[in-house]
Image (tube, rainbow, N blue to C red; front, side, top):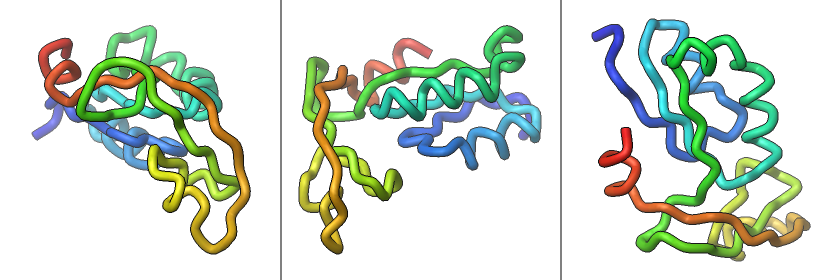
Length: 109
């Protein structure tokens, strides 16, 4: 149904977010990688201004706080789990990012 509120957890390069917005939904897009957040803010500035898109810079975890994000050159493998980010020998780095829970996201939005 159009106009529903949808959550895109791990929005990555915004493929799902774009699809949902295009169909008239409101979206809360969540991602831990600040580069993904910056790209989404630029790409969807009109939707954000219109209140159709909310961006949340956070990893989704079992507790609110700070966590270490393992970033891979293959950005779709960014993860809190170093084995996922480093699969197939992928190189990357780590950064500390805020963490939230699904319960907090649902209560907030």
